[in-house]
Length: 64
Image 1 (cartoon, rainbow, N blue to C red):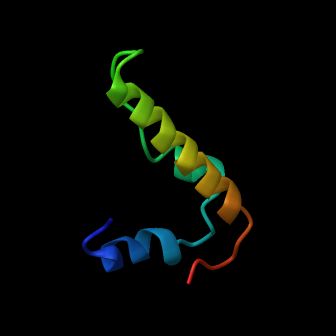
Image 2 (image 1 turned 90 degrees about the horizontal axis):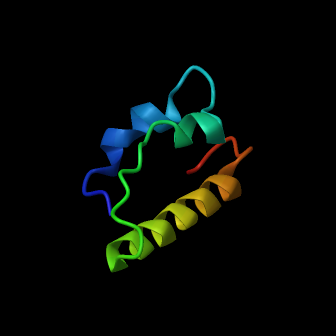
């Protein structure tokens, strides 16, 4: 959970053009843990959820 979501509003809500799913995905770099660890499984679940979120919002003109 983001403690100060308003800090992200200029980045995600007032860009000169809407960010694409690909552009938003490329803002982050995943640093994976070792394959086979519990942490890696949690990371994979998180990245899957992130991808599902990006697919869900693709093409939306407003989040709020």
